[in-house]
Image (cartoon, rainbow, N blue to C red; front, side, top):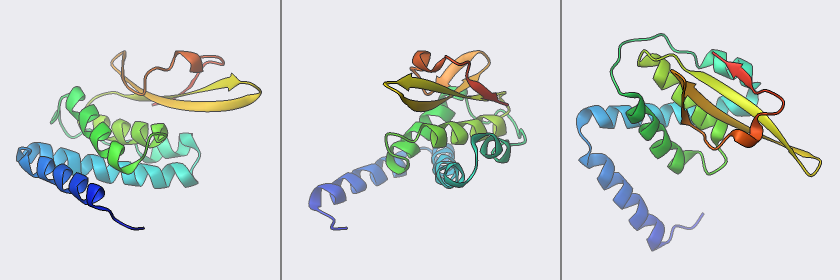
Amino acid sequence: MRYNSFMIRRFRATFQRFLALPPGEKALVAEAAAAVLLARAASAVLPPGRAAKAFRAKPRSRRHARRRVVWAVEAAAARLAGKRGCLARSLAAYRLLGASGYDAEIHIGLRCAGGSYDAHAWVVSEGDVLLGGPFEAYQVPPPAVFR
């Protein structure tokens, strides 16, 4: 892969923004990046239910607000998982939310469009959809829920 000056400038700007974060935020983004990379690998080789079970985390404490966890996962996934990485994003958020002491669920729904199926994953915590919207088109049949 050839690197052009635009890619190098973009990487440099991203890295400088990372370095400007407070220490706690840097740790959260680094943890989110690791979770996204592991989730991409897990979602490639495991069925969703087994991947969710593997990503279940023991609660440590409420270290981070839910919105900050989602922000960190989205920031890491935007650079590591691509646009179609909804399952990897959901698995990573599920793990980090659980580790921060929040109850979370992964919902996986299907949509039939023109004879083909499309799947989508999203995360619900305390009744709020935190990651993966819009999901309304994926409600029939009812989505699978992994806790």
